[in-house]
Image (tube, rainbow, N blue to C red; front, side, top):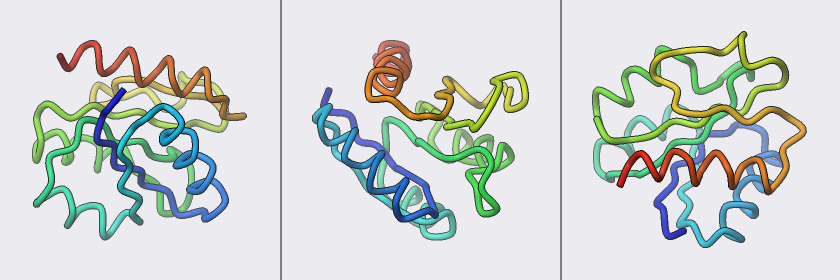
Length: 117
């Protein structure tokens, strides 16, 4: 896939799981906590941000809008614990519902990258 992905995830186990999935899809992955992700985005142009919609230090929907302001072509995928209707936002390009599967993450990534190019 060769996408440059910024993974914003505080939970170490989830971060490792998603990072491994992305690397299996041949993505280049930068993993950061939310605060550092903001700084990294000012220096590096990413294709996609993937973040958790519900953790206490989550990739909040307001941050999604700010990320799109910083990098207008960036695509955002949120990982949600439950129904998609609870995390709807115009800034979000795709959702993946937990439990996270390689296929569902791959489908979301393919869909948003198709819109990018």
